[in-house]
Length: 374
Image (cartoon, rainbow, N blue to C red; front, side, top):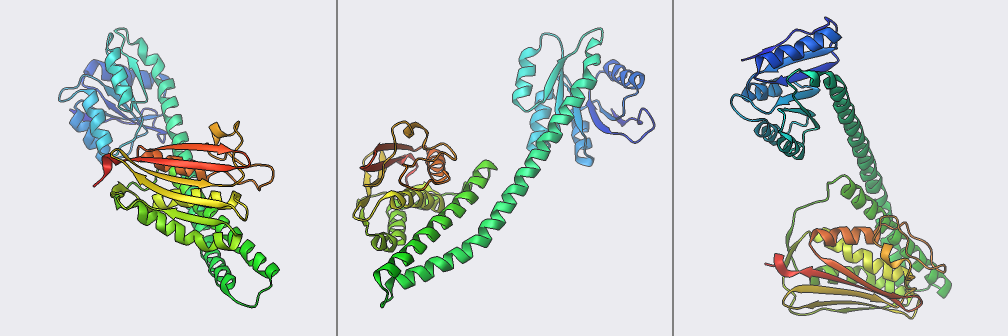
């Protein structure tokens, strides 16, 4: 049996409430409490779990009061059903005395809170405050998610609008760097333009990726990828810039690298960030090595530079978001690149080792397990 109940105060309801409760006395006691307190609730009652699910399909509620013992299913099954259907309405779980384990299970399934039913109905006194808190918390979460989505949309729009002109500047700088008739000072200026533009493009792409990570929308699709192909692409993209800067960029690829399951775009970003950092902090005359290796358990990729190095007190924090790992002689970065590297490598159950000495350089070694190989 289920029925929609008239609004208790005759005014526009502010709380739309679904009561899923098969005990008629408990139903009556709840409605009496609402009437006596003149609470602004519009209550729909369902004695069966199936009826409650039908009401949820037909209309939207602000909160659900859910009894554990129902005629056709228990409250835990009801929780699983509504989550499977994408319903995220806050649920307050009602249990009998001595049912704390069940209540904990309900919380793990997403219930906002639980109340233990008392024989004298004293638990009803707590319900209005609990209902109000549940709705307030839900509304706050929705507001945060809306703000986060607006921020993500803005960053996506901004990065898209910035990437096109930056790509044009980079292409023009690369063309000019190969042109004849420039004096040495002019060539240096072209190299600076190219390097700064690539740094800015990397920063824009990192901002976009971080916004996806924070929103929980990091792309999960994977495919069979040869890491050597990714490294070769990163090498070719950075070789001209390294030459113009006077830095030797070396690539050593193992010929027996197996394919692994990963997202190629994200893997490209991992090594672009590492090589980009190495180029940024390695002066003319220095060397950067990109090396791939494999054994029975893993693929290893080494990115080693002869740059400025990282101070020992900063090493434990270099993968933190917005942490800047620089020396005084080099410009500070915003600190997103290594955070992204670690996030992506962690998603593949990989690890990263780093060794560094100030004034001599830094070596990053990425370990990718072969459990996901094809």
